[in-house]
Structure formats: structure tokens, C-alpha cells
Length: 152
Ligand code: DQA
Image (cartoon, rainbow, N blue to C red; front, side, top):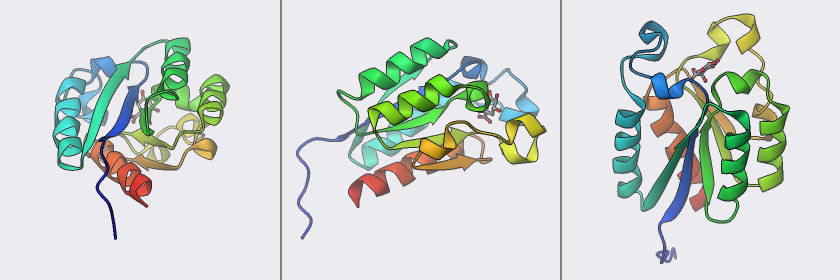
């Protein structure tokens, strides 16, 4: 028998560089939806699933590392779009390993259908899984997968 939890799941939705420009940035690749609209939709979805979201967006690698470190003390899991740092950041990979939280790597675009340098992710190997290529829906799919994993 499943018992109801007393507390909603706490989820960090973490976005890296240039994702604050969603809605105006390369709309042919990333769509016309702003990050705020994506987050509003995610909050609705989370509410239906007994989860709460805190979101952080930063263009700086160190702030993203700090947000992961802080999440260790309050979050049950992380939906993370590291943006271009996906392809370059050992520091973010190490931070994900260090905090030992389930992290779903999330991309709006299908990085494997784009330039070669986007085919390599330094973080995938320490993430629970990857969602890429579904535009704004990637975030909802990632959150759904994360919550299902936490409920298991
Ligand atoms: C991205 C893909 C990255 O390659 C790129 O640098 C981004 C966005 C995506 O969501 O599709 O900034 O993470």
C-alpha cells in the first residue's frame, strides 16, 4: 500500500547560460516561448503531481555550481538545462556527482541533430537521464520522469 507523503517533492529547475533569452533567441531552434512561460507551465504540472519547484537561471558557471550545492540541503531532484556548459564543464559534472541528487539533463533542441560539438555532453554520465529535442515540452517530460523515478 502506498502512503501519502506529508511534504510535496521539492525540485530545483536549473537553467544555464543564455536561457534567460528564450523567446527571442534563435527562435527557429529554441521556439518562441519564454523561460517564464515554461516555468509557469512546469509549476502547474508540478502542482498536479504533489511537487513544488524552485527555479534558478544563471549565465555563470560558478553560480550554477553553487545552486547545485545548495540544492543538496533542500531538493529531492533537479531538472537541469546546462546550456552550452553541457559541452564544456567538468565543474558542473563534478558538482552533480558531489551532491548525489537525481538530475535530469534537459535540452530544448535535439543536440545530436546539430553541430558536432553539441554531440558531446560532459554531464550525461552522472545524470539520471537525458531529455532533448521536444522544445518546451522537454522540461515537462524531464520533470515527469524525475518524479516517477522519485516515486519508485
Ligand atoms: C541547449 C543546447 C545547447 O547546445 C546550447 O548551447 C544551449 C541550449 C538546449 O536547450 O537545446 O544553450 O541546452
